[in-house]
Each structure stands twice: as structure tokens, then as C-alpha cells.
Length: 122
Image (spheres, rainbow, N blue to C red):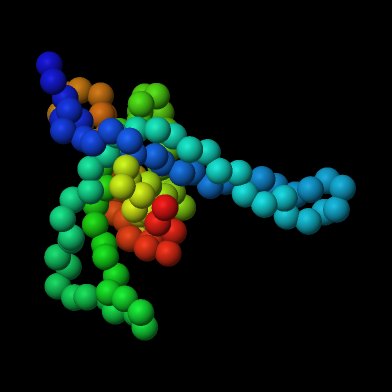
């Protein structure tokens, strides 16, 4: 049986950022560890929420990213995650991911509300 992720575009990367802890020598923050997880993804059309959030420089672009990891559904996606599309667009998660799939089967992909982070584009 073909799953729903057959339509997802290859080349997406999930970036998970976790605090590295405290440096035992200096006692200072040791920074952040970044884990990149390859996968396939799809970004949906803009969400129509009834209002537009406008900042000093831009209109906020809020959408839904559906992403499937290549290494299985055990990857947790939290609100600190970032998604990088094959074209280099960076999308920052604003909610934790919700695993989805065909009812009666194990989850195939995660759906996450995201905002465009143009300043981080590659």
C-alpha cells in the first residue's frame, strides 16, 4: 500500500536545537547542539486565520509543514525546530509536531505550524 508521503519532496532537513549544558571548567553556558535529520517534506499554502500579523519589516508568513524523516517516526519535533527546504527556505516551528497518517496504520509524517524565517535562508 502506498502511503501519503509519496507526494513529499525529497531534500528537506529538520534542525533540532538542544542546549549543550554547562561547561564544567568555566561554569558558563556551553552553547547549543544542532542535530540535522534528513527527510521529505511539503509546505502547504498560507493559513487563512482571518487576520494578518504585520511587523516593521514584513508580513508574517505562517503555514503548515508536513515532514517525514528518512530514519523512521521516532524523531521528536518540538517548537524549537527548524525546517530547511530543498530551495534553501528556512521555516521555524511555532508549535510542537503532531504525528499523522492513515487511520489504522502507524504515523507516517509530522504536521507542524511554522513561520518563514527569511533572515536564515540559505
